[in-house]
Image 1 (cartoon, rainbow, N blue to C red):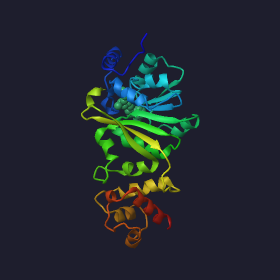
Image 2: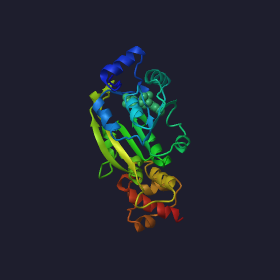
Image 3: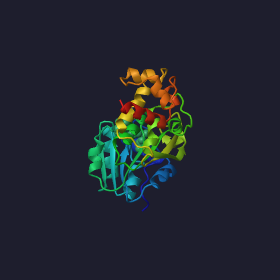
Length: 279
Ligand code: SAM
């Protein structure tokens, strides 16, 4: 008998009818219905991987990942979806479905009891894409890789040579933690319901940065402070956030006293961190 495929139009339509499910906009529910996209993602995984999936939805990715990987821990905020998943996937031994909000989840507690390589996979709910990625990158060093689908425009921001108005602390800090590469572009027709924009899948591979800092949280706080009021110069934003720095100190590290947040690179922020730590 051939293996069941959930991630296709006919099966997702059938499941939604059977369980009288309406996709919830407030949870960013757009289900993946294109097997070739699913295969591209699952091809990145092996039986060595323990996968944490964020937002399994109706299981388009969950089922093929559970077939291939050593273990899948799926975290889904929607209680109804968790019920459907348990009924439809029949809880394979290596699959754990948790009805939780990923932003409230104690990831360290989960990670501490996992042995071997951990990969996070997610077709991210678009309304909290940045919060989730920041949490995964900055709070959870044990995650080796993140395979994340997001709106195309958000994905493109990671590759901009020059920061612009759409750039934020996430785009600045991400290269500190990992290499980022494009796995696939995904047309909006490959989701049900169809969103307004296309998507892309990115692969984040963790590696040490060539210029490590001792207190990564402080580095992130400094970047956030500089971005706190985008119209204001970095000097003002830092002072308003309680950091003590003057024009001369900025000039000494080759940052103009009139610089704005988007004009600074990650290495500029690391130099700022060092000056501010010498206080
Ligand atoms: N993975 C499925 C797929 O590819 O078809 C569904 C992806 S859908 C874009 C996003 C999923 O994330 C939904 O199932 C939604 O309910 C879930 N979700 C939204 N907010 C969440 C949160 N804070 N914590 C966990 N899951 C969340």
